[in-house]
Amino acid sequence: MKKLVLIGCGGIGAYHLEHFVQFKDIELAGFCDLLLDRAEDFVRRAGSGKAYTDFAAMYDEIQPDMAFICVPPTCHGRIEFETIRRGIPFFVEKPLALDLSLAKELVRQVEAKGLIAASGFQCRYDSINDTAREFIAGNPVLHVAASRVGGIPDAPWWNVKSTSGGQLVEQTIHQLDMLRYLLQSEPDTVYSVASRGYISQEENPGYFTDDLSTTLITFQNGVTCTMMTGCYSLNGASWDSKMTFGSRSARMDYHLCDKVSMFGVDEADQAAETQGTIAGDGTQRKSESEVGVTVKSQVDFGLVCDRTFVDAVLSGDASRVRSPYGDAYKSVAFALACNQSMETGMPVKVVY
Image 1 (cartoon, helix red, strand yellow):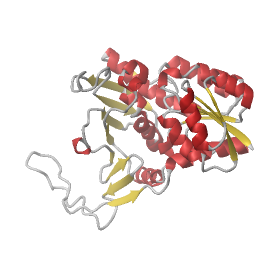
Image 2 (spheres, rainbow, N blue to C red; image 1 turned 120 degrees about the vertical axis):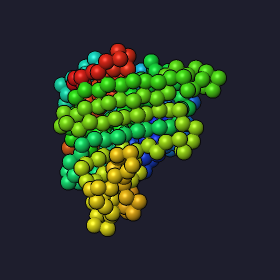
Image 3 (cartoon, rainbow, N blue to C red; image 1 turned 90 degrees about the horizontal axis):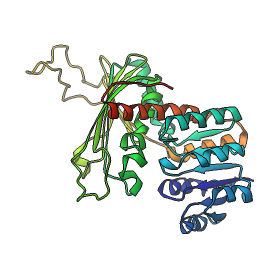
Image 4 (spheres, helix red, strand yellow; image 1 turned 90 degrees about the vertical axis):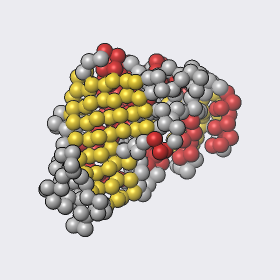
């Protein structure tokens, strides 16, 4: 039976562990964290394995067949280089790194070694993506209005942009990745601006990152996009997070890992009553009688993602992995280009 080890026994590690315990064809052999009690807790929850504080010692003793690396953004590098050197297939949580040159070198070594490696863009495995891609194929998209708004995660390193990368890199990278995946096009240029001052030190001591950012994106296929993301929200009423894909006669509201709602695609839908339905201010109004077609998520996409990677290692066939390491690098480069634009105040060309 193939042996799996996990490095990083925090929140995202627990997310993966919930999936691993459902797999009966692998051995959960080791758990590593700088805090031994956290690793020991994972051993208890898994019902197997051994706890470690040194990942190299764990590798020496267990000789694993695969590794899941679930560490904060600034901790990437040494773990991956050693994992690659030993030829261990690995799955790493996003982002791959906060330094693009480091990420690029990791990709080079993975490909030179011919390793099966992937990253945690679980949203690619959601069942709603088939519907979304069908809509885009039948309704050429002109523009995407995208947003992700939430609160501040309970992780001290997340509060500082130098250790998290900021919300766009650490969280909203999922939306950036899905834009690439759904549009099947690469970003060309980004122009990002950031805002601060809404969240005070009194409200959140030790907080030093952007409250929100807004990015204008041009894609190589001509589609434009605006992406707004913020962590200022106090409740769900503050913003409706979604990505609206607009064509000339239909639109799709894509709610990440939840549902897609399409308007103007069904005969019963009265989204476009007449060409001359114009508001007093000269803008087109949507019809109040539009119905739309909604398709909800039907799968545990995170479970499917983990199972797909495990199956790839067991079979030696990685063709079903939807976010291989080299492709995940492109989403990281996309996000880091946005950060570069925020820092320089200038548009930045996304270069892989």
